[in-house]
Each structure stands twice: as C-alpha cells, then as structure tokens.
Image (tube, rainbow, N blue to C red; front, side, top):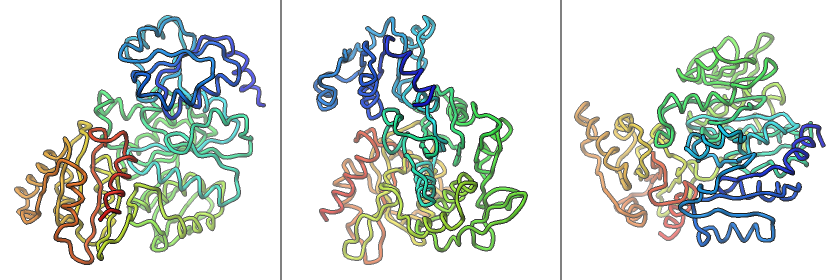
Length: 465
C-alpha cells in the first residue's frame, strides 16, 4: 500500500463523513468507506426511499445513516468531509455554509486522483471525449499495459485503488461537472475541443470553460497537456500550461504534434516524423473520429509503438450509442447516435455520411444555440423528424437557413410526441439505401434518465420494425 493511501485510510476512519447523492460513483464509495472502517457515514439524496430502493438494498447491512427526500439537505451540518456527486453545484448555500465552517468538500474522483499510484490519462471536451478515452485505453492495452478505465465511463475506481499498481495505466473520462471543483490534475491531460454545452447547469460559457481548465490547472512541469490546435478556445489553453503542451490538428501542419499528411496520421517531434496510420484504414467513419485518433496519438505516443495505434484503428468498432449501426430493415440502415446531445456533436456525426439521411432530433433544452444546425440539415438531411423541447429551435434554424440561402424548402419536417411515433415516421416512405439516424443534438432528460436509456429505447423500437 502506498504511503498516501495508508495515511488517507488512517485519517478518515474517525471523521464524520457525508455522501451527497447516492448514484453510480457514490454507491461504491459508500461501500469502500465502510470497508476501511469509517464509522460515521451519512448518505444524502433528494430522491425518497421508494425510488432508491434498489440502491439501498445494495447497501443493506452497512453502518450508514440516510437523509432522503425533498428536504434532504436540512441535516447537512457538522460534517468533516463531504463527498458530492458531480451534478450538485459547489455553490449551493448548504455547501457554502459547511465549507466556511471548515468542512472539506471533495468527490470520489478528486480523492482517487490524489491517491492513485499509477500514471493517469484524463480526457475532457465538449465532443469526442468518450471515444478518445476508449481509444487511449485500448491502445495502451494493445501495448501490454495493465489498464483501468473510469471516470464518466467504465466504473468508479476509488474502491479498486488497493489493486492498482505503480506500473499500471489509468484512463479517465472527466466531465465539466467532475472537473468543476477538482484540485488535482491527471499526468497526461487531453482536451478534445470546447464549444457551448451544459449551459443549463453552468452559469456561463466562461464558467464552463474554466471548469475544463481544471484538467491541467494543477499539473507540474513533468506533465503533458494535449489540446486541439483547430479549436480557438483550447489552443489558448497552452498559454496557461505548466507542463509540456502537445497540439493535434486535422487541418494544419504542425511543427510538433499529431496532424494529417499524405492521407496519414503523422506525429512529429524535434527528432523525428512518424507515419502512424492511413486514415482510410480507420474502421470508425467520419473526420470527427480521425480527430479522436489524432488526440489519442498525441497522448500515448511516448508509451506505445505506431503499430499499436494502427492495430486499434483497424479493429476498433466504436462505443455504444455513438453512430452505432443498429439494424438494416428492408435495405434501410438505422444508426443510434444518442450521445449526440449538442449541435456540434450532431453536426460532426452527420458529416460522416456521404448521402442525405433521415434525421430524428430534439430533446431537453440545455440553453444553447441551434443556429448552426440549419446548414448541416440542408446539406445532409432529406427528412427531419423532431420531438421534445428543442424541436422548435431546430425547426427555426432550418427556417432561417432556407430564408438565407433559398435551399432546403423541400425537406419535410415532422413533429412527434413520442419515440414510437418518431421511429414509425422515420421508416415510412423509405426506399432501399436510405439511412435513418437518431442524433438528437439535445440532452435526454425530457423523456429519459440519460442518453443510454434513450439510445436503448430507439434500438428496441427499431428491432420491432
């Protein structure tokens, strides 16, 4: 056991601990704290006992108290350490009060980063972070490292920390919510891009961008920051970097970094230029996935051989809910891109298709602009099916593009109330060779718990056709 971990276990045993939100990451956290001898644990959650029954059953027999329901925060007083779930803002009055009183406000992920003995690769960004995280993980595994995948994907890792060795590699996907209060940064940090997102939770674009910066804010001179040269916001991150900055670009030739040359992903440093992989041989379609490989290459190049990256590029089929081919029905292909929860992500996904598609879009409104959607709809969509609160915004973006260019007036726009209705309308009047894509450009919370549940519902309906 490393010294930091031993010290943590020793110090926390007699502390009064609160766990705020008992979700995916905090259920294993509660079990772990109980297993290392923490005697005073209280779990707080807005949901009532009935809604949480399956989760609470999982914690049965443990020495844990609960404060549940609408007024769950009333009892949040006098705790030494408060572990908060990522979606709870750090500046709610109850947390501000406890922080001023002297409580330590932290999270499962922050404690893990502070204690992890292995090298950590962390990935964030508005789009592409899950695929890039998975690519880094797979490439390192291909090289032969013992790897751990966690953060926003995979499983929480704090309760596995006793098993992680110094020679292992840990790869984390980190959301802006997780990063917002972090005071530790990974050894290798990757920012795929930054564009407006989650402005229903973050107070401004500035706050959202500042949260992303925490992925490298606490790095040292020995660490590495990988950023997208083509994204104006992330390019400027290099000015604040404490370690080595490595750029990647799909549209510029770089003096140093990962870029495209002669149809290949190339990595150039001061000593050499390595041809990594022919982009035509990458199994994942679309330039956005080439960009994900560029980011992954810049992150792992010092730890693997070019052949390791090439092997993954030629065999990796992608992550569920990300332009996932669900089924072909009567010559019509159905793709599930439920992860498309912002306009920029949907735009990138639609660019991967060489023909016009039937698009199902719309969902929960994160208070972001949809104006850029008009152009891609005119260029890449033959029929538009809309549902959810953002449907009028997407329709307005198309209408504005029609007024501006005179193109697109022949695109049928159908408003639906349910996914059953949307899938039925998407298949109606199709011909062999058509493509139907679910890429909502919106969050899922108007109808579903998360984008996975939305994608699974779509797949279920497609499989019933």
